[in-house]
Image (tube, rainbow, N blue to C red):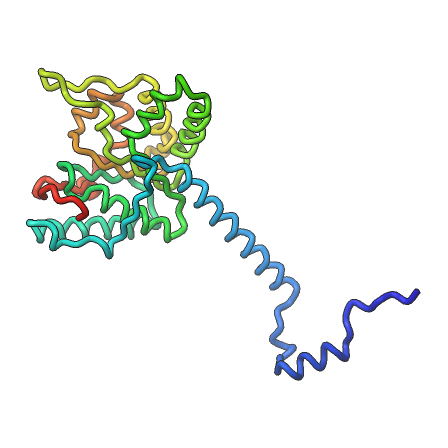
Length: 260
């Protein structure tokens, strides 16, 4: 039996003529291979991003979305301060595209800390980085539930693993898991298992050999650094809390306005 030809040269010539194709401009095999490899790498990158984002721990299991176009300074009585904070957050987001450092957003409840943290996270996600959002109050709930639910224990192992290596980790409302202060103004240490988890995460996100941040951590908190040190090991806070003034967004002059 005569073998079928892989292609018909005459038919190919007709297609080239009909479609007005310039054979000299057709990609080479090496170029086609490079294109295929680039598409495969992009697919892997997208799946990688989806994995980390899917590991996020949201309050009430409801994902939050916010970008810089949603930052409405008119909703805040102190318009100038709101504008300043928005600009500072945007500038930090641009810097974080090509560098790693920790960012702190601190102030009272409802002043827009989470909104700007989400906006920074959104910007970095668009740049191709892996991002993960964790409500620490919800994380504490999972830690408490794990003793009665084996599936929660498995989930916490995966969450911890993702928290250690995500390019960008947002710890939202960090400190609320410590509860209210005592009558003497001291905060109780948080759950031992949560302390251990955060210590491991903080260590993994540091490059001790070069004394610098390995992965970016963004924290929103209502608490001062000293209060957080009451709740956690001082080493944990020292490795997560930025000491650079320019990497701290202070909402002290802002008033509580939800949906800012």
